[in-house]
Every structure is written in C-alpha cells, then in structure tokens.
Picture 1 (cartoon, rainbow, N blue to C red):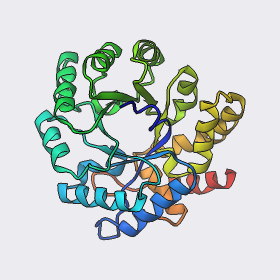
Picture 2 (picture 1 turned 90 degrees about the vertical axis):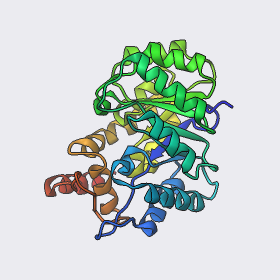
Picture 3 (picture 1 turned 90 degrees about the horizontal axis):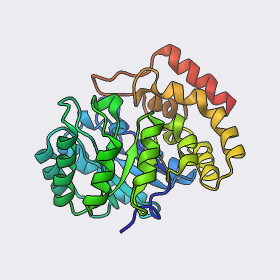
Length: 294
C-alpha cells in the first residue's frame, strides 16, 4: 500500500491539552481536532512528540488514541506516533496500543544513545517486520543527537517492504534532495520543518507534518495546497506572512509555542507537564500581536 495518495498535503502533529491539575483535557482535545479538520488539514498525527508523549504513561496514550479515533470519525486519516530509543519496547508498544484504525505508525529515530547507521537501519528493520501497520521514519537530528543519513533512508525504503515513508526534519537540503532522487516511486517523503516546508515541496516532497497547523490551520493548509499545485507565487506570499509565527512556535520549546497560540484562541488551558514549561509572558504577548496580522 502506498501512503502517497493517503497522506499527501498537511498533516498535524497534534498537541495534548491538559487541565489545570495536569490531567488530560479531552473536551479541549475535541475542540482542537474539530478546529484543525474544519480548517482544511489532510490528516492527524496523534501521540507525536508535540503531544508531549515523553510525559504520558501507557494508559493515557491508549485513552488519547481511542478518543482521537472516535472524534475524528473517519473525517481524515490518523497516524500514530510510537518512538523511543529501546527497539524492543517500541515493538511491544505498537503491538499493545489500539492502532487498528490508524493508517501508519510514525517512529522517531532513537534519541540520546546515538546508534551507528547500521544500528538505526536494524532498529527500523525490526520495528517494520513486527508492525501490523506501515512505518514512517522520522529523522529529527536536532532532538535525537544523531542524523539518519540519506543512504540509510534509501536502503530502508528499498529493502524493507513495510517502511513506506519518512518525515524529514533536517535542514540539510542536499540530504533531502538525495532522498527524493533515490527513493522508490511510491515512497512518501514529507517535511518535518514548518519554515522549510514550502521550499521542500518545491523540491518534490509530498507535504508536511506540521506543528504550525495546530495554530493557524487554514492559512498553513492553504499555503501547502497551493505549493502542491505548483502555485508558488501564491504559496510563498502566505508563507512569508507566517514566517514570524514559526519562530514563535519553537523559540522557547515545543509545544509551549503551539499551546500559547491555542490558548489565545480559547481552545485549551495553557498547561504543560514538567520538564516543559508554558510560554513566558513576553512570548505570549508576541503571539497575541502576531494573531492581529492574520
């Protein structure tokens, strides 16, 4: 099964709202899901790192997934994030989570323990062979401490049938171009960097899994849609209006910026779990002013 026809365009790595007592706010999660779908996103990524998964326990992850599938109600596809740096634990979690209604699993490259390229290759090969769902690689060296090379991605794409795509979040454009040049024809390649997504679509990427589309989904999805149609003059006009907003999303931590935006919209409480903290008063004011430009 090719994911290119299912997951092209704008995907959203959705946040996890919390109440003031730090329990999961399912009503707020429902509001966010409706907000992004009603404003044109093409699919939802649940339990990505933007959803603060490192501070969620297994039962919470299961509850979030079940609620998300019910709330989305087949309006758009759902991808499930399952990652970490323990290969066996990831396989166990994929097999234990209720992912029957998911179209794919997005799994970030191992963080902190810095495996070799052979270790990364074998990590994903084992996960793909054990998973009932297609695997989307996720290369985010700024967070993991280790880049997954273009040659490793291409090797996995050609040799491992259940690996069907990659979310590429490096700013190394030559690496991106090598993947696009050498990938199998039906291999999904999406951007993992909001600020680079318009240019990467111009190079041939199939869309983006976005943080920004939590916050201004209509504008961002419109920009991506125009870029996918090769209407780059119109797409870049929107892109440059959003450029400062991308900075605000990540200047302190992710998802503090996204939650600050959604708080301004009245959709969620501005609560994160430690070690992450909410946006500072200065950033909150900058975000409030930025909204006026939209």
